[in-house]
Image 1 (cartoon, rainbow, N blue to C red):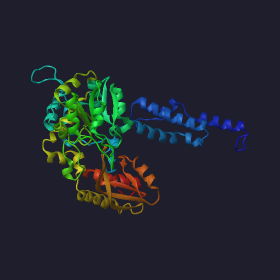
Image 2: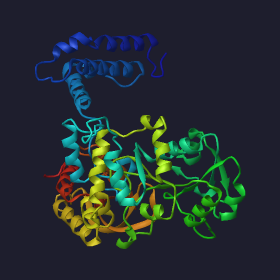
Image 3: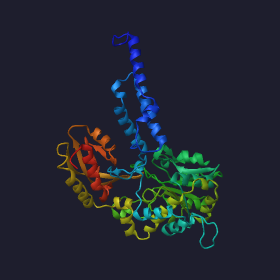
Length: 478
């Protein structure tokens, strides 16, 4: 007997009847007409997946009725699935989290100038590795090296695909099989669970930790230097901060120690900035040019964090050092493509005029945006949706704090304004989940049982689109 008190044979017969009612793939394909558009391979895949899902549900004992296996019901499921298969996986979203450099949402937005240049060089042939002066093969790095040197004061520069690659390439070149001394308090973990010790291990360098987690002194570095020492490394702890009883060695002291012992000094800045953002109300962070001026031999930093460009790892420093890194065979495996190169060049050129950079580079514009501008943007959205959403949720504008993101300035709060939604007939988690599934996904954050749309990271030209997404989700009168 089954749990329901029916004979086991009847239960098995019912399952077999349902399985026989599932149409064959060819029969299903015969139901389709000219309105079904898409590559045949995807159409067949969608048919097979719909039928396989029904078969699995029946065998698993889920509630499946014969009516669920009829042509109208199956075609609805097929059309929905085919539509998803034909839609791009990589799409744009509205970032209403208030996190400016949001790693999961693509980090920095490229300025219009960079996007225009990407379109131009991507749709035509280019001088990527062709020297127009000599007519011979050229180097792609030369197209941005001079710009980086002019902006930072470095003697030479190289660009690879991200900062972790930059660190690994530099260590592999200068310290493979030898020791690198670094403060214990600087052994950070970056996004995706990648840790500085792991990167060093892959490079072939041997890590030598000195000092304590909260305090490291110059004598700690000096005591650790041996014949096997290849480099002194400083890692900027951009994604966390130790406060209280702390001490760390000043960069100038580390450089002087390296010079006395004939050892190169390297600094991994992580989120390298070309502008002193403390002039605009943010915390003081060392700029790339300040680090170069201090005499560091090699500096690495990201192109897509505080710099506001595409994902890239920038390596700058003394020419004798950078030339060694360039000759490393691993360099070819880590090189950037023409799109990254074009985007980076366009962004770098904006930095020659600081005021232009602050307005044209979206990351910088959002980080330095006055609260009154954000307030006006929030009230624009409020005016578009408040009355139409009155039956669905309470809507108001509140004060919140935004974040820099990207592992930069972890304790920096940016005063901001957000549109707060408190739903009446659903949980705030259902609202958050639902808005991720609208045509243009809306990503916000939950605080105090409200869904917040932080308007610092919502562009002016996205306000209308955001209001449409909200009205679409609630089924309000658009």
